[in-house]
Length: 196
Image (cartoon, rainbow, N blue to C red; front, side, top):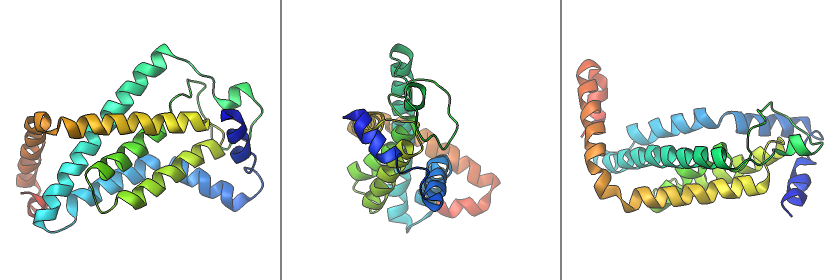
């Protein structure tokens, strides 16, 4: 079933140049979109909402770090061949032949989406849709199986639940981050209006 679903999605690749370019753009733009979105969370909204969104941005960072760390451990103890290693596929982007399970891209995007969902942020549903599209793009371009993406989503959900559950224990670290940001505003005064 895993390969069957992969084949069904990946088989569309190479047929429509505009779709290929779109999926390549989506899959390659993930780190940049995440950075831009984090800056958006940090610098938008009125003062009351901004503090809440800045907490959300920090929790997203914690979730990403935890999720990616857990995935690194998983990769070190379990190797699963990528689709293009085992089968003849439509591979649209270059990639190393490291373990495919689970997808780092999926961990990254679903860390953002799951944290927003748990924090009940207004952007939760648009970002969740974007995360799902990114997951599909990883299959479309031939570097991941559906199980890799689903595994990444579940790993991210678990990581985000841990971060939110232990948010009170993380508060000293959060305050250090806010303190560092406040010091930064002394050198870049324009950032002061986004402090609290």
